[in-house]
Structures are given as C-alpha cells and as structure tokens.
Length: 172
Image (cartoon, rainbow, N blue to C red):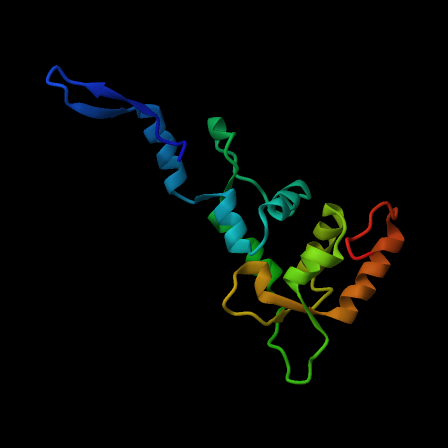
C-alpha cells in the first residue's frame, strides 16, 4: 500500500492497462528485503504501536533509514529479532508454586505512567534486573512474558524515587 505508484492508460480500442513508475518498483525492492513496517513490528514485539514509538524515542529500538521513504516508519527485521532476543534472554519457565505473577500486558496498561518509565522498565528487563517468566507461548514478543508482581512494585518505587513524580498511572 502506498508503495507502487502509476496510472491507467487507455488504448485506441478502449482497453485499459496499468503503467507503474520505475522509481516505485525500486522503492518496493527496498521494502521486500529486511524491512517491516510499524504495524508488523508492533505485532512481532507484542506491543501497541504507541509503545513501539516510545522505544524508538527512548533509543532502545533503531528505526531503519530508507532515504526518501521517510513518511513510512520502517524497521529492520533483524534488529527487531535481536531486540526480542535481548528482551527475553533471561526468561525462565514458571514454577508451580508461583502465584504472584503479573502479565506484561497488565504492566503496560496499568503500572507504567510515562514513556520514560516504560523505556526504563524495558531496559531493566534487558539488563536482567528482572527475571521474566515465559508464561504465554501463543503470544508474541513482550506479551509472552510475565513478571513477579513484588519485584515490579519494588523496582517502580525505586525508579520513581529517582525521578520527578509528575505523572501517575491510571490506577493511581
């Protein structure tokens, strides 16, 4: 969508055919390789598009530079895969006695106030300050993980003590 550009041409016998501009084929070749759009990136990461944009702004996920195709946000499939690998590197299987778990989706919706807090949480997960628990094998990326609720609340309290408390979560 919005990659191939062209026009319809009509023959003297009233037959129509499509003419595609050569430059748009070059643009399409760029997109067929390693690059995926924002929607596909969000799906692979298991995050909303807004959160993917926050990762880009926070410098945790690089955006692909495609020259003149700047109006479409594109990401390298390899970079996204490497990011997921770093994010889930310390994960473990849940033990049977673990009850106090909180899903990554719940954390995103209810526990993190700002994009800076979200990026700090992701960075803490990558640096293995938390040990994510692989709990949902049918989901993708970040949404496959769960965390210990007490660890999260302890981290959040410590993080908020170091920054200006200008924002609150919806629950707060």
